[in-house]
Length: 313
Image 1 (cartoon, rainbow, N blue to C red):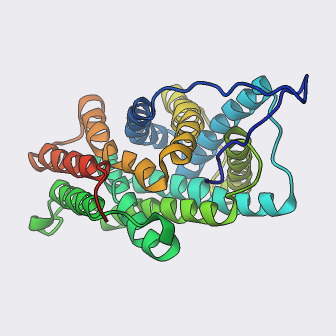
Image 2 (image 1 turned 135 degrees about the horizontal axis):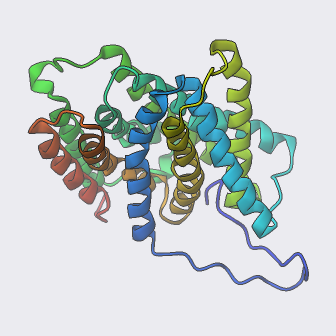
């Protein structure tokens, strides 16, 4: 059981009357929806940073995402988690899973296309695989899944044009995107080891985490950026969509997936993101596309399919 698995609850109006669990769509449908949302998130980041500083885009993203979750909590009559220990661990998780990677991706897209940022995001399961071998002995992947991860990694290298020595890539922007991708599995492992039995629902945990990340950015952003002199509408709308969908709704979906199918499988969503991010970047932003991008994306998808298979370890 993960930190975001909701425990059995009773109705607030009648404490002794069990509440029937809400039916949710099949996890594969939610997996696909999450892939689409996060695939388009890189386009929204690029549009947002076209009008605002990276930290401002990140702050806006977190603020809109937090607002969405607080409304959902109010509708469902959820309460914030309790306990100083829980809030202390959520503060660390908010930094690793939200404040840090969101900011790094925003800065990276100042110098690299959204398509490349989405591709770098696909390395997250590879980082997670290496880290889980050390930190999560009970979640060791099977040989077939390892093969899938290896194939996915080859697909990423194909997209990046590794045989050409990564010619034309901005080293700083690419490094920032890769560090952002590393931050995600570190944060998930931290959550799993520290907040596996809080007694709080997924919604309340997610809302508290995003609230803390928003507060972190609210402190940092004024120090490193000046208040905008004007507010471009399109970048603002992109930031709002990035927060409400790419952060608020997406995190709810991901937490549910982790609770149902485990962190290793849930993180495989990142293998579908490059194809979606590439299609969005090329079709909407007019970013360049070479033959290696669709070929590499196909290899990535093949690797992702293998990671979903059940085989002997």
